Length: 260
Image (cartoon, rainbow, N blue to C red; front, side, top):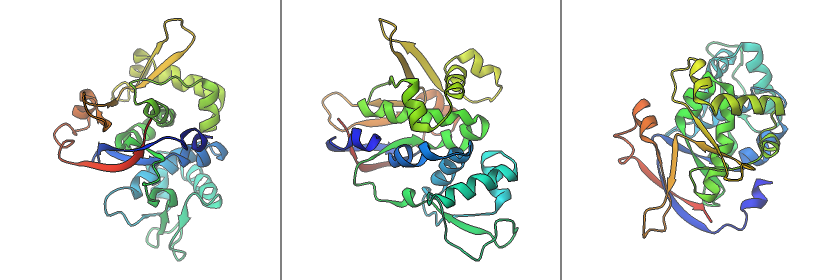
């Protein structure tokens, strides 16, 4: 379990630009994702989580049509996903008077994990555009979230989880996992999709070629020389593409975090 892997890590503070990033609890990967049955439920959960994490958010007021638009799916798929998420307790309905099919009397949804305090340290920073732009365009982008988690553990530019580990954490079929990794991990294949989004994942191999290394290209984890405080920022290509280049320095947030 991810919780067990990080329980003994010492606490530090990290800095991240809150306008372009948000903190995601480790429990999302540890407790939420592995048991979900509906293929698009993970995507809908992350989208709702990011929404309620926005400044001054009081929850997501939505009907089935709104939910389907969030992840670019049909209404029937959105209904199956939200029924599962609410049934498992991962999403709650705060306004019982709302109706999922009503255009005016919409339900207010909340995501309990998104509102839990971060001072326990079990969380990692995620670029918002991975949720808002990549996930609706390519559902396999959910793999990038898990890779970010493993990448941040050692605070390196790459990580090396096995396919078995990714399958276990995300609850995705092995065949799909290989397809997602191969599509996102090769620039030519990614460009053939015509998404107009920057190539998201770089893959390489260890010197003995026994381990495949993954690097989420949007994120740069680093620590300045002579400093102990770890930092994370967007790589320039992504900052420019999503319009965050000038905003990052002004909107920096600190939270207690655990790091090795």
